[in-house]
Length: 91
Image (tube, rainbow, N blue to C red; front, top):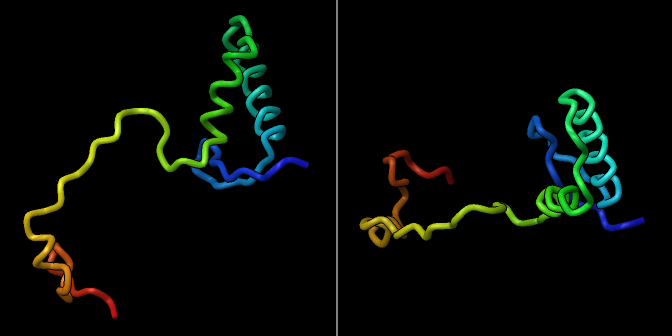
């Protein structure tokens, strides 16, 4: 049995699956889509790409990541008991 991967369903529900289970789920979805839309099925390379994305353990996949500059008051709040929005921190 392969390693279990944490991934998410379309409704946001977290699930654990092996890569083989993930591939079977993707292929089932493709088969349903091909039948409903009356289009040609995807080739192996096109199927492998979304599987790689779904199996990725990165928090974000794709797109450009921009670094966020620290707020100008961040050092002043480092030891503060209040958050930036003024609400007291919980103990």
